[in-house]
Length: 96
Image (cartoon, rainbow, N blue to C red):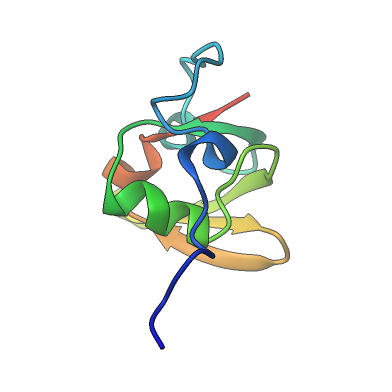
């Protein structure tokens, strides 16, 4: 029995196929201590689905905890846990 039907749809995670207004602010633009609410994820494919599976869905509150000394990766907190993302991945997550 394989993985099926539990993957989030692009409508739920705010993928680029969504018709909502596009926010110009992304997770990659946050300063340490700042927070925002996920408004959507730019792009399509496996990375968008993977970010949604990690909890980056529309309406989720996200806070930037710290940045590595060379600026990459970023440590974020959401839904009660910490996650690290590369700056390029964080730049795809729109926030409000």
